[in-house]
Image 1 (cartoon, one colour):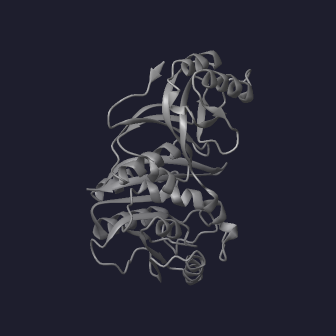
Image 2: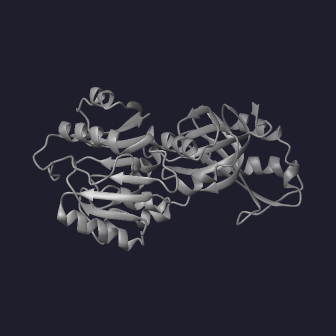
Image 3: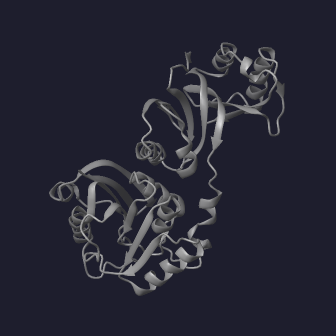
Length: 350
């Protein structure tokens, strides 16, 4: 068993969403980098991530799309229900004296022979015997959280749950302007976070479409610049931006390879390149679009800028990235359906 400890640094446990195998953790780490929070990843087992960080992780609560909750870790270890109970017995629960508490267990594909409710009761009994706290299931002062995977576990106190209701309310089909190719709000938010943007940054989407990325960037406190060559998309993007009361942003009609922007006037570029049969490339090949994107990015991005772009799998873009003076810092694959997989690339222009 490992006990959390350290002056100035705290150990946290995060429960990630299971919507993608690699994007949730990448998003969390990108947020911490953007906010200047020093951290060290201790372990990852499925959806459970343990890390040490200096300072609070409230930026994850404000920004994350693919994280469910964050806890201040009290103990961790490997094994099953008996190991969880032994770890719970080794914790000093006196901080609950005079307070109310509840216990919640989150099983991530683990402990199939033990019910979560049974483990909650068992841990609750341990806590009750070792403190003068009182059990209250609804709105307790402290919620004790046990996250269990197939190999490991973490016991902690809940710091926050990420409220993702706003993202759900901005799903493409709920917007006044919708097209089947519109980017989902959760994925758009995650892509924006991968750019390491900070409030006040200028974030450009040169293939804005219906404005999914622009809306999420603006809601994070950035100034979003949204360009598209299609007049219908430009009008629809502006309609969606207004619908969500986004004032810190511009929408303009422009060629994807001829941006009306001054040099070094942008901090981040986040975009979803056209793909599939329903998306027009206006006579250009997919590779030409990537090449043009990277070439222009090198001109308009300020020093230390980052570009995040998504394209169909099968495009060999590594040489284009290096030719543009950039370096690949992260990438992920997203399966859309049997015939289509998209690749997310994160490149830095140092």
